[in-house]
Length: 308
Ligand code: RIB
Ligand code: CA
Image (cartoon, rainbow, N blue to C red; front, side, top):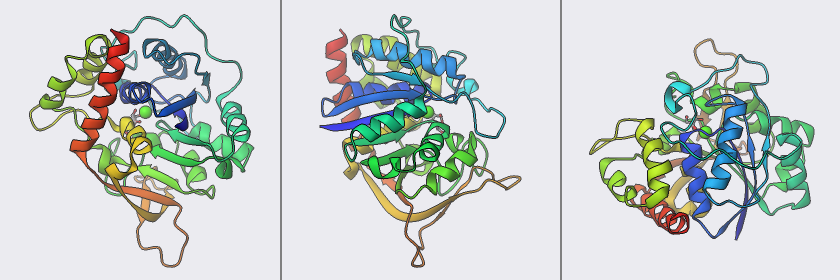
């Protein structure tokens, strides 16, 4: 059993990542924390609460955190994720409220209570994570592993230099990468190969309520599905890594986050030449796409059976 705590900004691909968790009995979700990102915090939190119930995630705590970046003006991705944040998926509203307190305290206290047991996964802007390591630097020792969807060692998506999660809060990302742990970075270099093509969509469509109410309306709103292209379910790659790291090739690197560049702020400057420096990241350089989709379809099929 692998315990994980997910910090997220649902978010179409965040929702598909949570569905992958819900369909994977080898994962135990210690909690979900939310951050402003794709859409405002109120919406990312409402979406996380609705997903908790729709995906039958039980009593998993959902705790809201930072509405925006440490220093920068807010950037959003509602043009990509839709005004609701879940594309065309319309889930029943949550009946149970978010947990009390702040995500940062929840992250610190959850890791303190189970040192070495919980994998921390961040699939949105890193503001909550940065505040947690500032508040309690020992979280970097308490986390069993720290995995993010974010960054890129080639090109960005929000601009040529920067990927959205990093660009949304570059200062937070710089704090996180310099915190002393090893960040497993699933960047655009691999997540942009995890595409919902026509063949993938054909495999997803028969999955009952899960397909009809969430996966298909969300994924098809996330981008144009074609025979050889489609929307990338970026965040699900982070969960796939936790489930089966062998799906990926990861290379040690020194990653530094640009925070001063006029055109390059938010760039994850990745140096695979360590030059006797300690690597602060394991950077994913390849993904076995066929095995990724087999793993996703297996989990979604299991989940769909329980949702009807
Ligand atoms: O660049 C992709 C990332 O930005 C994903 O986490 C997506 O949800 C958006 O937040
Ligand atoms: Ca996200």
